Amino acid sequence: MSNSVYLVTGSMGFIGAWTLYHLVKRGKQAISFDLSERRDRLNLLLSPDEQRAIRFITGDLTNTDQVFKTVADNGVTHIIHLGALQVPFVRANPILGAQVNVIGTANLLEAAKRHNLGHFTYASSAAVYGPVERYPAGLITPDAPLDPHTLYGVYKQANELAARVYWEENAVSSTALRPYTVYGIGRDQGLTSEPTKAMLAVAAGKTYHISFGGYTQFQLGSDVALQFIAASEQPLKGAFVFNLGGTPTHMGTVVELICAARPGAQVTFDDKQLPFPIGFDDTPLRQHFNPVYETPLADGITQTIEHFERCLADGRLAPPA
Ligand SMILES: NC(=O)c1ccc[n+]([C@@H]2O[C@H](COP(=O)([O-])OP(=O)(O)OC[C@H]3O[C@@H](n4cnc5c(N)ncnc54)[C@H](O)[C@@H]3O)[C@@H](O)[C@H]2O)c1
Image 1 (spheres, rainbow, N blue to C red):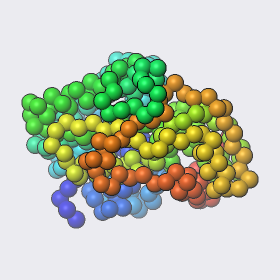
Image 2 (image 1 turned 90 degrees about the vertical axis):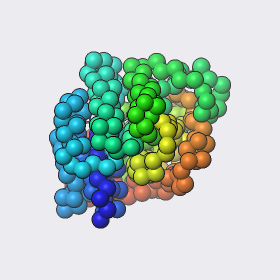
Image 3 (image 1 turned 120 degrees about the vertical axis):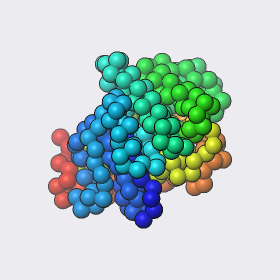
Image 4 (image 1 turned 45 degrees about the horizontal axis):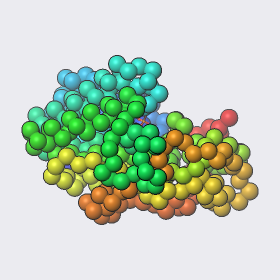
């Protein structure tokens, strides 16, 4: 085993659980840092035995001393910072949103500097862009102006700018990834979780109606986690921010693929495009990383349904209402 120790924040969340999963499967030392002690998502991915390889810390990103101590006491060499409050929670409590999403990131950037970690990997979001009408039709290009219209997006942009200053002033390099519509085991909240919920319903032999349609880029949670780990293990020199991309896909295709995976499945959708772009040009990511993790959508959907079926069969998941 190498001396690498990965601190994963937001590790009880959807992408965090997948990140712990891949680190454990690769025999890496992982520290889980999350305010939540609920292992619901992790239990869908790792057995209790496998979870023993992880060091669990119940921690608050807003607590500067605790963040510093966690990095200092555990020999952390890599930080993958995923912990955050999502759009509805930030809207409901903007001050706490700033504390978690901005101060939390500041605490980790400062910890990275103080402990000479050299590099910092973190989640930003496509929410740093503005309303879809602001951009020409098609994929949003890498040089498109940022124009966040939610506090969540504003806070994410603040983190990107703070990371740039840490590079310029302190030589702490960083890589941010901006996921878009992520699906897969553990995606259980938010509007764009509906395609995943449809896969769970089909696994349970139930019908499902997805309340939106149009085009988006679907990214598998497992792939996104692998990309975060790659970003952490291949530290680029500078303050980099990459959109995750993929092929814009119509919801009709998603529904067809679900039905092809389980013939007879009954999934419907409202064909209305959300007020978001159809996707992002991910050329810069491809120029810097090889491979880019992108499980074909048909395989990702089939794997997700099969995994849900196993979890339903062994009682790790209750059938959806
Ligand atoms: N899932 C997506 O589609 C998506 C899209 C764009 C960006 N992102 C970003 O990727 C990251 C991971 O997303 P996710 O879907 O896994 O989110 P998630 O909401 O599932 O998980 C976030 C985790 O952060 C933890 N957390 C919240 N406040 C904390 C605090 N004060 N201290 C410690 N932990 C705290 C929560 O308990 C939770 O487990 C986030 O930064 C998110 O903004 C996700």
